[in-house]
Image (cartoon, rainbow, N blue to C red; front, side, top):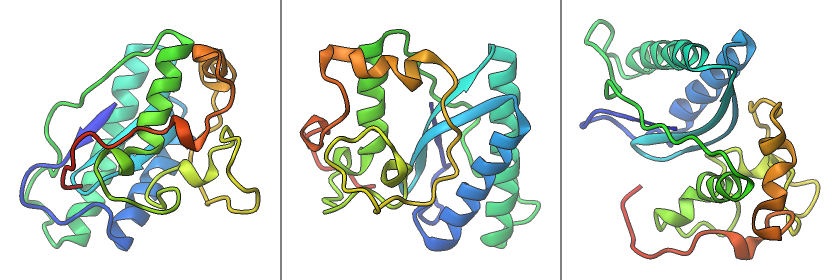
Amino acid sequence: MTIKLKKGFRSLRGKEELAIIEAAIARVNKGGDVQIVEYSVMSNHIHLISEASNSADLSKGMASLNTGLGMRLNRLWRRVGQGSVFLDRFHLEIAKTPTQVRNLLVYVLRNDVHHGLGLSTLDPCSSAPSFEGLRDWQSGQEGSSVSAKPQTWLLREGWKRGGGKGLLSIQDLPSVSMVLEA
C-alpha cells in the first residue's frame, strides 16, 4: 500500500520526519488492527507491506496511522490546525501468490533503486536493513526496525517459493528503468 503527501511539503526522508514515521508505525503495530511488516519512505510517499484480518481492520489501522502521522508531521512543520498532509486515498495492492509477495518485497525494500537514489547500501529510510530474508546481506548490519513480524504464511515463508528462488539476493533487486525524483 502507498500513502502519498499532498504537494508542497518537505521530504519525508529527513531525520525528524523519519523518526515520526517510524514511531507511528510502531504505535500502529501495537494497536492490533493492522501489522506493518515492511516499509520504505521516499520524499513524498511511503510504501507499506501490511497484514490485516479483514478490510475493516485494514481501514481502521490505516486511518489511525494517517491521523497520528499527519498530526505529528503538522506539529513538526508548524502547521497545527491547517488540515491533512496526505492525499485522501491510499493505493492498495493485494498480493495473493508467493511470486506476487516476493515481487512486492523486492519493490518495497529497494524502492530507493526504483527511484534512482543510487544508494550503495540498503536504504536506511526503510525496513530493508533489518529484513531477514536477504541471503547476501552481512550479519551484524541490521537496522533498528519497527516492523512487525509477519503472521501470514505468504509473508513468513511463502514468498521464498516465488519463482523457486529462495531468499532474496542483491541481484533480485529492481533495476532502474528511469530516474525519478524521490
